[in-house]
Image (tube, rainbow, N blue to C red; front, top):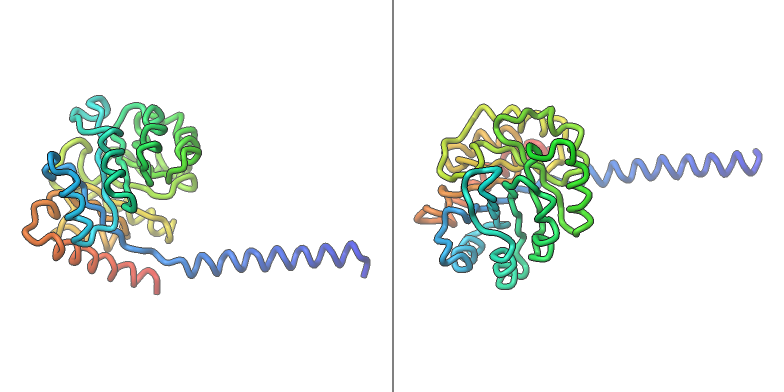
Amino acid sequence: MRADQQAGECACESGVAGIALNEMNNMTRLLKCRIGPSVLNSDLSQLLNESQKLLDNGADYLHLDVMDGHFVPNLTFGHPVVKCLRGKLPNTYLETHMMVSDPIQWIEPMSDAGVNLYTFHIEPVPNDILKVCRKIREAGMKVGLALKPGTGIEAVRQFIDSADMILIMTVEPGFGGQKFMNDMMPKVQWLRKNYPLLDIEVDGGVGLNTINACAEAGANMIVSGTAIINALDQKSVIANLRETVERSIHKCNV
């Protein structure tokens, strides 16, 4: 056998081994349930105390709803508040759900504020989705892509590989306390079927009465606002949400 043939076969074997190793790594990477309470409905004058209480009661991360009054009619808080919260909660995983018309405008400020996951809506920037994803990564944050109820899954298909998480809204964005839209679950089901290890988040009307639908569809990141915030026993609600999702995840993992 010529030396170049031998080298070629060795390279091929090495490449096959590398592919096999990657496949094994993917197989051993299991989905994890994460519960991220939305603080929007909490007492915002006591944001730190409310956030710490949620974390003490079992929250995995905090979901921060940022609204600009344009993309949605409501107006909430911005990066100065997030930065203050980060200063008091240095080890907490923070997601900002950017319900804004110009997601690029807020990437650097939110990165500076210490955001971990920057989730933006694809609807206002249909021609710049990849550009926004790239800038978010360059700023050192993970990428989340959010879809309003009226946005079909086909609108995000080609961008899924550029994201770390897909958020399926189960209410119209902009206001808390709305009724859960069960007809959004086929989007979640499609994502889970085609992307078994993808982080899929649901947000809107999620609570003890609707978590089964979310879990069975395949969501593993659960945003819950009023159901947790207004609960007399937040720890119990968070534990029940987690237990339901973990049962479904276990079925997927086995």
